[in-house]
Amino acid sequence: MNIKDTTQFIQPFGVDIDLENGIMHNPTNHLVRNASDMLGYYENEDALQQLIEAESNPLHYEVFEVPVPEEYGHLMYCISTLQPGKVGDEYYMTKGHYHTILETGEIYLCLKGEGYMMMKTPDGEWKAEKMMKGRMVYVPPYWAHRSINTGNVPLISFCVYPGDAGHNYGDISEEGFPARIFYKDEKIVIEEA
Ligand code: S6P
Ligand code: ZN
Image (cartoon, rainbow, N blue to C red; front, side, top):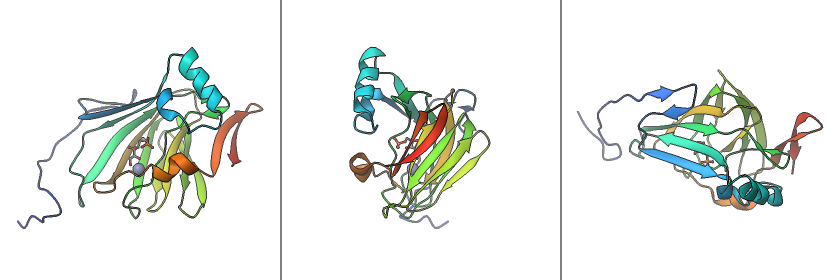
């Protein structure tokens, strides 16, 4: 067998996932983001501060990974579990990112809950695709992506993307996305910035 320099040879393995609670057993990486990690991301910064102080900095989302080599040919995967809630009128969301290698896509299979995958391109085009249990959202190459939970239970997804994709948060923290999702007048409303 000719093993390429680009792509390590590793042993096959299996991973147990609690689909109902959105937990990967024995993850080697467990990322936890609380409200205080989201400073600058919501429209209503005062409401976020209030949440941090009055509700003891609640959990926002978790990502469980069993990392594989971050290389061409491997497939990185994770379970992403985003709590229900609002900051002011705006639904809880992840930070969102581009991939460092922009021309890499991602598959999100929604296992529980409901919400949206908010996506944008560097040129400012945007699209919000509905997420719900049993629905797969394809994030094509070049599109930044952020999950938004518009339901009452955790939004749980399984995602898969190229091992060498990487994460680029840079311009999202400065520019955000062109649209936000709120609960207003007893409805879910997608508003352009
Ligand atoms: C990675 C994939 C997920 C997110 C996770 C958290 O490409 O899209 O693992 O990293 O859902 O979101 P964020 O925006 O904080 O990385
Ligand atoms: Zn991604």
